[in-house]
Length: 368
Ligand code: 9MR
Image 1 (cartoon, rainbow, N blue to C red):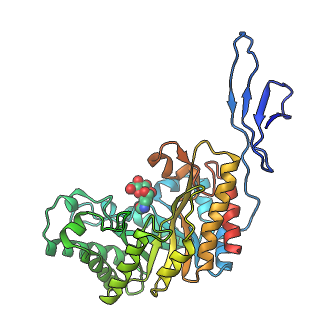
Image 2 (spheres, rainbow, N blue to C red):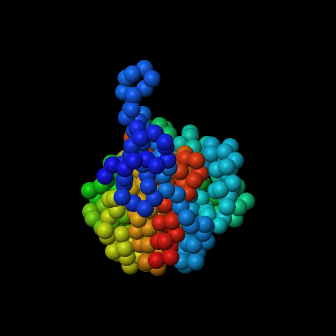
Image 3 (cartoon, protein in one colour):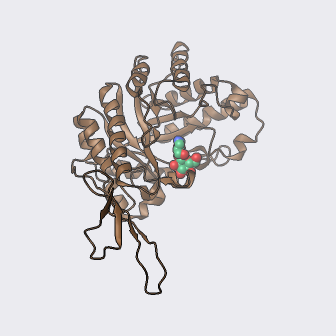
């Protein structure tokens, strides 16, 4: 329905009623300009904001979870507004370094370890009393070329994986670790990377055993995306956990990344987490963001709020789901627009650090 915009004197400004309580009106100027030609000017109108003031970590803990957290990394620490909010443990009880503990950052050449940037993130967490999730030991991506192009044989690559995982996990003791990241293709087959091609699935055992030996207190996870609902990829993860346990390899949890799309949340979140926790492990939602096609509208924000609530409520409903981490917390620092052009607005705070309705969705999910 077309409605006249009451906020302007000119009847030339009209908008579209989006049918929800807080109006999001896209204004289009349809009148004549002084030059006599007809102009069309779109003005971004106000989007709805969160109303809850409850801290996300506080509400997560009240729900019996260990934490609500965020990814981050050291380049963001120059932004004082960003740092102040991330340091607020009412909101965030856990952080994950987005990049600085990956293989290319920590062992750029064989046997040479660099922990400076990772240490910056670890010190930040320690100073604030926040849990730290190490991310990650073994992944097909962000590998230095000496690993991918070394033409190592099975025994040598096993030794390289062993040394790498052992060294990084031992440097950051007492943490949660994504020891293996993204081992599967979406159809549940093993991803073809240098580790699987050279060692076979046993590379996962090598990495986990090395991590456990380096730090018996570390929580050891395998982490992947598109395993939020039941399906071939999640079944592959279930089968991997079973085979690891049968082989006596240490596995404490599965990280469910949660890179999701507004309006497209799988309906089997709870059943999926239950089948994983039934194996005697914990799960966590490790990289949650729920993206939309831009521009953001009030209707998309409201759907996103519902979607965040659905995901968090699923974690709340499953005892073995220990926490929820978003992949950074403000749209200012999200990876989404750079990887999915035309999409974004995926996080609970907007690019100006204003809390979106998604924030209320998270609160409601933990209180459900
Ligand atoms: O957030 C990370 C981004 O800065 C990097 O450019 C990217 C490189 O692949 O990795 C991003 O983090 C990924 C995470 O490590 C694993 N799951 C998917 C994340 C988003 O790509």
